Length: 558
Image (cartoon, rainbow, N blue to C red):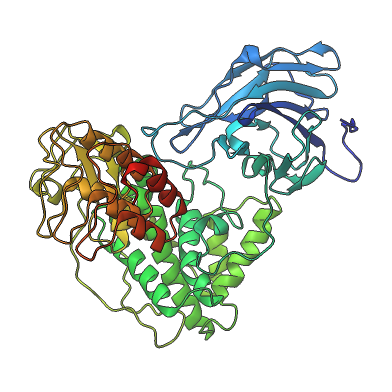
């Protein structure tokens, strides 16, 4: 790889170079070999040369060991050790045992994170294998310069030993590079790296897919406050706000989508039993409390809705046919953030001052958990007014840790979960997304394993638990039922349809593969209309299932 001059150029900031070499196994990209070079950092002995964020939310970063990081400067090997000076900060300091001389270069390897079904849900910043490649947020595996100043970040890739179809990407351009970006040390932490058989799709995204919060997060963020609060109300609230309105404004979604998403967010805010929770406390409980997790999203979005209403009334700008004052503020803050400027809540309030005067008291009340009064809030148009609706406070009825541990715990007696029959100690096999229940969905679905469940029990239409599991593609549950000697795998319901017929109709190839191998399954069974499983699969163009049924039991073919 061509060597770059590691210096402090007269016309720009000092260079922080990151050279990445992907390594491969039979499954594709398997790890990364990293070389980081800082131009003349002038770090004195026992001071921090680099900082590394050891966790992001509830996601642990890559576990480095001092002996696996090699460092050199102009005087030769440079001893480095790790330490933490603040218990309340995730940052680990990489300090030097002697003063540096000239440029400093570090060498180390990183491997993707190992996860399984019990790994708690969290921000997807970790390195993971994906379709023969690797993808990761920079903060998960790259230390950053300790000197809080503008650097010229230069990223380049060595693909000389990579498969021919390998491509390498950084948020700011495609490699192998070099690609440069000026900014503060968090520039790399807040970016994404990918390498592998990456495909490009130049066509616009399907109009059926709404803009996600992640699209907004990539545009405009806010730095944490000096007391450590991460300003999640802005980061996540802004993402929620614009993911509701932009698809409608751009003509990608209709009015029903706008109303449904907005009502869902308002319900999630108003129905939460933590509506009065201090937002700093919600940050501490974010990954352990059902309701605290949604506070920055929903409270932040509702606050922005309230501010947008005030700004529109003050400016007289209504509708979606032009930029609103809130749009102008967010765009300007986004540009400043992209340039590497530090932005905090005081900057937000400064933007509001020319329109609304001092809004600091209302802002502090929002953070503390004072319920927001929305009776005079309008939504974009002068005649789009919110209406009050009394609804039940949401209570899940079990600890959030139940989902991660896959064991029901903390069951609240008298709750709907308890009334539905859940018991502490139940093994959870499958769950729906609990967050959907905040936004209008009336229930959370949990499938638990119990020996006393009768697989052959029928509903009013003659369908068994076993039949329902096959139709929904729950292979693990189907296997559990099939392990029992008493399961009636080929029983028909009132319509004459078997479990195989429903699996074939729904296109559940994995379940069909389990069923057709059994001797007690008649693939030629007909329903009350004379249709066979093969007919259902063919009618719905499930080619793989047609092949499975046709090839597995030829003796049944006519």
